[in-house]
Image (cartoon, rainbow, N blue to C red; front, side, top):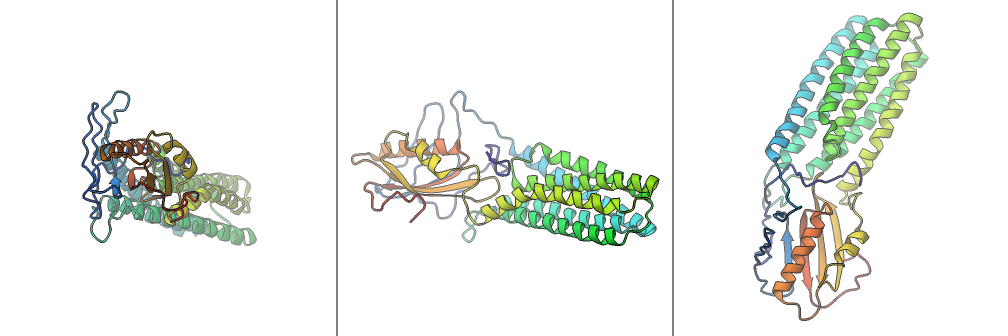
Length: 360
């Protein structure tokens, strides 16, 4: 499973989002202690949109405390924003006082990260906005767009670090290494603490991953400045500062590449990296009563939720009640494959060649 799009059952949003376009004749299934309730279809060819399910059977009880989780995420972002903005102020003041271009450059880099944290927090807020007639999935897609933007900011930061490193290598300056080391040491504490606040949830959401990478990258930059400051103070090797900056830039670039590729893939409605359509079809074909399943489309509607649409071919003679049970079983299995929003079209005869899974 991809570390950048691992979807768990602990969503930030615990409420059913019944979109305005949902079909009124769709099945509604409640999965409790061996109880099923179904709304009958008026025709054998209709759509079905199913979003959430509850398990009441032994071994399938999921408990969610989304309000606590969301509050914790918000708190992490707010604390991170305040701490890092305070550090930016310290770096600017000290950089100006000792004429240290490296501290001022790092202050600009950290200020960009503060902006990225603020955008990530905004994305989580927008995910809670209810769907409406114009935005039938709400604003959940903004979480993907913000993750993409954050990845691009990281790449720009890498470019800035490399540019400054080359300039300083060609034109080394006499620096007060002890002051640089002390200020950078404060940066390690602040950035490290902020990164740890996102560490536990970094694999559950792209924006949390982005925030973690931002803060970890900043801590590495600060560590490099500490080492460089100490060596400069004792040995006056002023060229070491730009060399360390280039090494740090390479580390950040490697850690950012997966974030960039995953967020770009999701923004283009590509299949999430941890999901394979062919494996999904093979798994669903094991459900009794399905003759075929085709026209499968899977995409991400946010950094924590996936959606699927597909045509299901039922054998002739399948009753509406049997169809409802089969669709319920499909939904149940897809939920455990990290797919939460499901639309199924019922077919009694194959009208198209289903060999091309994603071709309408």
